[in-house]
Amino acid sequence: MKSISDILLQRKTIRKYSDRPLDGNLLHDILEKGCRASTTGNMQVYSVIITRDADMKRNLLPLHFNQPMVTEAPVLLTFCADFNRFSKWCRLNNAGPGYDNFLSFFTAATDALLVAQTVCIAAEAEGLGICYLGTATYMADKIIEVLELPRGVVPVTAVTLGWPDEDPEQPDRLPLDAVIHSEVYRDYTEGDIKAFYHEKEERKDSRAFIEENNKTTLAQVFTDVRYKKDDNVYFSKVLLRVLQEQGFMNQ
Amino acid sequence: MKSISDILLQRKTIRKYSDRPLDGNLLHDILEKGCRASTTGNMQVYSVIITRDADMKRNLLPLHFNQPMVTEAPVLLTFCADFNRFSKWCRLNNAGPGYDNFLSFFTAATDALLVAQTVCIAAEAEGLGICYLGTATYMADKIIEVLELPRGVVPVTAVTLGWPDEDPEQPDRLPLDAVIHSEVYRDYTEGDIKAFYHEKEERKDSRAFIEENNKTTLAQVFTDVRYKKDDNVYFSKVLLRVLQEQGFMNQ
Image (cartoon, rainbow over all chains, first blue to last red; front, side, top):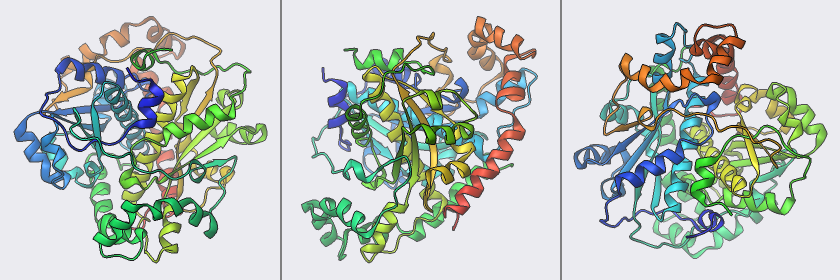
């Protein structure tokens, strides 16, 4: 058994999974550990939707931009901010819930994300591989339809889970000093940025990435291909409309 | 050394810390592990502000509603959504960043929260205790001033960190079936809610909580005392204004 240090330090995202099924008891244990994560006021304002059914996966596939791991992984988990259950409990107990506002959404989203990350670490400790799908918020409106999420519930992230069928290289990270600040935020000079991103820019895979995408700098691959302004603006509108429709913008 | 299963299953929040200082190398190792967490497109759009200085802690104390662990813990970490660094890198590389919108804020907040939870688990594996402070978003405007966060940076959560000086009982959790759904969201009947919350309501500490607060149901302690509608509405406005001011609402 690997030590927790090794699990955290050596981890990498897994996008290819073997045919080996994921045992229901193991999944239960992992989720049980996830639900020990910190939660605001012990309210547990989140829900997790488990997708195993092949038809459901096929319905979700285009909503996750056809990323193949959605149908190839034995399990897809969708983590949701959920004030529906808690508010129902309040109403049943002669208490008036005041959670139809943006702060409550953010509180519930935080709860859901801490559970998600704990589930991922618990899974990786068992030798499973995981991959986060940021698309859960891009296509939140359509995911809500497919998963039949009621008012008060919003998907905030999704994760594929299964036994690894690949052993990719670990991706690079910025030097730790690039992301930590002591006492106050020390804003970055041009020299800082150049120094902190130098290694990333010089990597072979980065250079290949620039060439494949017909760009002149690595940053352009992000701004012009992977995370474009027009897409971000469009999906921002979708997500804000979803918050409105799911009842989180009544402040 | 505890197994990772035990660390995750037996964890509890620690609010009282001993005088024992937190070694800088240990903190560095823990943060290094945190930064191995999944991050959107490997952009690492987060920053962590480390507070150790007594004056800084005193400045932050009222912004965290005077919770004593803010000054008593050797270290306070503030986890921030940060598109400032990444956007600067883009501009330096002839690329036009399009990250001044709500989706980008949520992407960066997700990145920051996954790092926060990984840091917490790495810390707990070392025997340290942690406590999340949800107040980081309530008072985001003032925390931005004290920590000198530039445009593009928003605090999303804070965590106190230190050697435990208490061994509280582990808090309860809802039965796992209350928070998981298979394939689609199965909305809760009155009977479901009663069954899932029964154990929580019957607990001795819950009954004491109701009495202390002069309420008739546990839910009323949440709606009338701990997480009130008026406060939520007020802090929603603050947080949305902060997103506007920090440049994340230009969609």
